[in-house]
Length: 105
Image 1 (cartoon, rainbow, N blue to C red):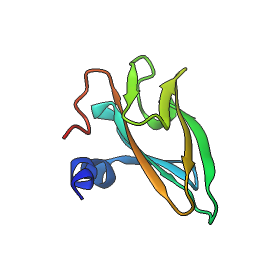
Image 2 (cartoon, rainbow, N blue to C red):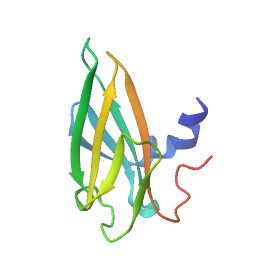
Image 3 (cartoon, rainbow, N blue to C red):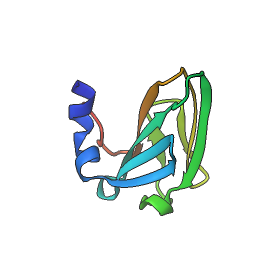
């Protein structure tokens, strides 16, 4: 619940973008940040992968971004997701521009 409270502004006010049924982002362009939600919607463990251009989701591709989880990387102007998830599980990552405090506790 603490993590949700820290990130709730993304879920309430963020712009929603779907990469696939299993991956979506909640973006706050003014904060140069996004929350990436990843879901395994199957009954077997699997890798969930996808990517989307930063400019498509309203983020400045000229900035340097970092993710708080290894499952999500930002490179080449794209948010790139590759997560090995157990059946019916989920993962979350915060992507933010260098120097940004978005998503901090």
